[in-house]
Length: 331
Image 1 (spheres, one colour):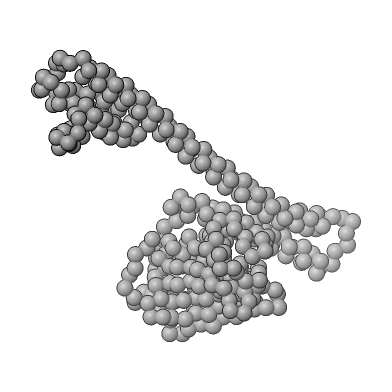
Image 2 (cartoon, rainbow, N blue to C red):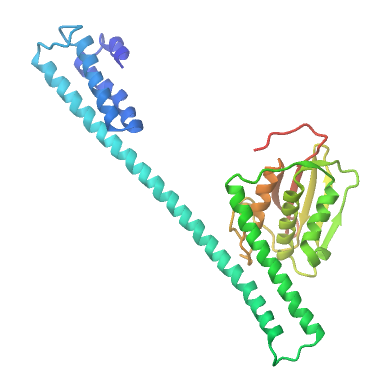
């Protein structure tokens, strides 16, 4: 600012140029607070006095109007510094309040999802257990087998819920590193189908025997495929198959999973990958499966996106870089 005043003093009154020092005081007040701004204000006053007010190159003042000018500058600098400091504090408080609000909203969403998804399987498990323990009910072998199967399925449902919550927290904390190894895609698909249990019979699989190997974490990619398949099965009627097609483009190996459900709107193609987003018709579930699938996909250098189906339903495409292709940057 002192250099700027030297350049401008030939075209403007020197006393008026003192206001330029506020351009030094203001950012210091905003970034560092009132204490540092006061130090800069005093330094600016001394520099202006030394270089521009007679007698030059001294700190003495002979003209009373120069005293007034310096006093006005210091007062102005202090007021501006205080206002800037208060604005900074208000902005910080607003940011904290917004962070707290977002955190509370996330906790509310988690509690809502978990309370619903915990209540349903626990109720079914309790009812099945009470039926097996009841002495007043005459149960045949098939009835007992059905109740035991209910307990098994609902227990698996609870395990998936807990696993999804743990995986989401690990992904958000950056604590889910991928342990990559070479894998054939058909083996990854087979592992994902095994994880689906009896529902795997509803998946029509078309493999590409020429697809190259991919370098991924098999456990994480199994979760990606299983979560996307579970989502597709949930939105498809039992009479409609879910299609899984593996193909290769040279650089990428593509796994396309297509359902025949209600479909997706263009504006929701990205939103459905957000946590607790249920998408099409607000189906039951925590809304975590697709968010976790994309998180694990990106952790392995893969891409996962959704496409609206030309007729009905939707397609989810997982692109895995071929191990033979040149490596790409992982986001």
